[in-house]
Amino acid sequence: MSEPGRSAIGTWSGGRYLHYGETIEEDRLAALLRPADGIDTVLTADAYGAGEADSLLGRALAGVSREDYSLVGAVGHDFYVGERNGPKGFPRFTDPSLRGPDGYASYLRMAAEKALERIGASSFDLLLLHNPDRIGYTSEVVWDGMAALREAGLTARIGVAPGPANGFTLDLISCLERFGERIDWTMIILNPLEPWPGELVLDAAARHEVKVITRVVDFGGLFWDGLRPGMELVKGDHRAFRPDGWIEAGLEKLDRLRPFAERAELTSMGLACQWNLAHPAVACVAPTLIQEAGPEARTIESERAELAAIPTELRLSADDVAAIRAIGDNTGCMALKGANPGFEGEEQADRWPLSPELAEVGGRWGIDPERDLVGGAA
Image (cartoon, rainbow, N blue to C red; front, side):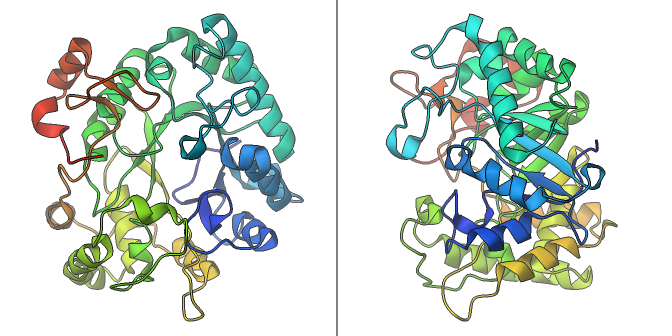
């Protein structure tokens, strides 16, 4: 079994299970996911399509030698006994209405085994705890359960994937402080136009020798050079949560980034990936492949080919990385999920109050929650 590679494709691409752009056909997505031509790492989550994404990935992997790809999975949303709550999705398996701590390990094992059965594999190379709630970040019982999956041979490595929206900064750092000896990888949102807040956890990841997968490297598809001013997204597109004018504002910044790409002989996506990988903790980039609407839109297959062709040698200097970050600075642009000083009300599955203990975590890493973690309205 192998570590995740430098570039990866997730089953969230193609619009079938998470709504980005047009929904492509199953066969087309399976072909995109099939390891080949320089991309040998595939990612899935059991909650996508309530298991359907796992099954489709299994089709994509049929006939491919197990030594030729790295398989990354994610479990954590209970669609087996939990009831879907509209756009919020299925509850986390740690929801007290579903089970207590004595049921965490058995749930994780069941979810991992069923996911592997759908995929047609005997083990993962990496299994992530998907979108945990506060309990998932803090419970030793949860991480005992995750470690038991590795000990049982169901996965070679374990990790944590915060989400689905941006934030969880202090929660993730605290999780790495407490359980970093067990955790091999984490996944965060990071790209040159969204350095904040993901960048705030990179030092902690490096200190605890936890490798980082970065998603949303494409900044909602902008780095694929397929979006235009005034462009209408397809109905139900997940990017509708972004503020009005985000495409136009992003294109203006992208124009300022193009000289860096040209000097380094990189495409826009190549620049985004290389900027991420220039950070020592980042070891893998997983942009979303999006088939935009309209007959003139570039094909999603051409995006895959571009991702596969991104040079392996880093072509950006430290000065380039800093200058690009300054252009893309998005500090304070959104309300963050997880523990947040601006949170009020009853604890939710993805938002909760900032505790004194987490404020102390921030202090250890030079993060002032009132200064560094406060953004605009949700």
